[in-house]
Amino acid sequence: MIRKIFYWFKENQTISVFILLIIIGIIGYCSSIPGTSLGLSINYMDVVYHFAIFSAFTFFLLLTISEKETDSKEILFVIGILLITAILDEIHQIIIPLRDANIKDVLTDFLGGIFAVLLFIGLNKKQK
Image (cartoon, rainbow, N blue to C red; front, side, top):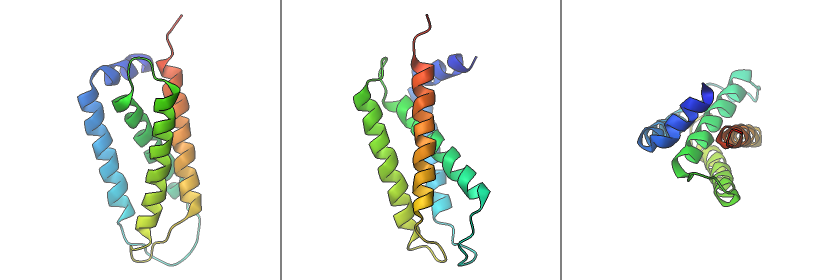
């Protein structure tokens, strides 16, 4: 069932691009919300958000750029885009009131993206 949905998104790249653009918009919007305090507390919902949104970003980015057979160059390109996006997201937050850049968020974003890459590779393998 999951594999059917995966291939449907691969075949309907216009929808995958649309979803990717929505995800990019969500990242930009959430990154622009001013903070509420100067505390450095670690909120588990923040970790869940970063992991989930960057997983979705990476997964749909792979769906939109991959050919029939995804090669290692495409995977490395997407991982590079993932890392650049995560870093730029944190740099952007420096100018937002009561927000700051956090290496923990970059790491969580990256781990979410790597999870998506592994999921994509697993779903993209041909069934025997």
